[in-house]
Length: 139
Image (cartoon, rainbow, N blue to C red; front, top):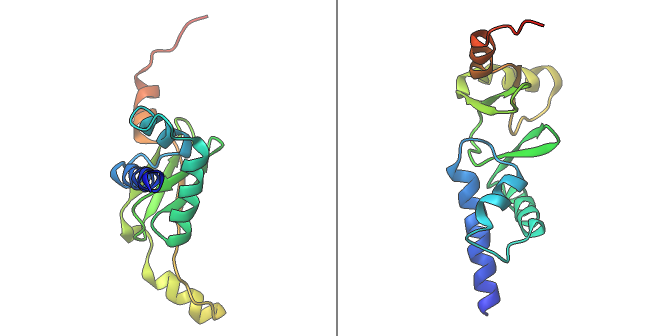
């Protein structure tokens, strides 16, 4: 019985960690964040719970950035910006996904849209600002 309770606490901690951060964490980030509090936590436990949360619709996968799947606890439709320089994943407001596009998909192709994911890729404001403020090094 005690083991089940610990597993439940770990599961809740994993979901809470995903939902309370805006950085769109990876499984490895979650593992390292929770390991001090749960010394017997395994990376496998984190991955298994992530799979359950995705299957249940509690979280969504934003995509793979720098070889790691990134997660979002905000399951409401919204767009993301992914920086190809630093790897940050940033939320953009819902109005970047116009509802009329979902209606067009149904009208033109007959598909029933359940959800929509829109990704923008480029260089984030912070990286642009940092690259502009760095002086050129002379050779």
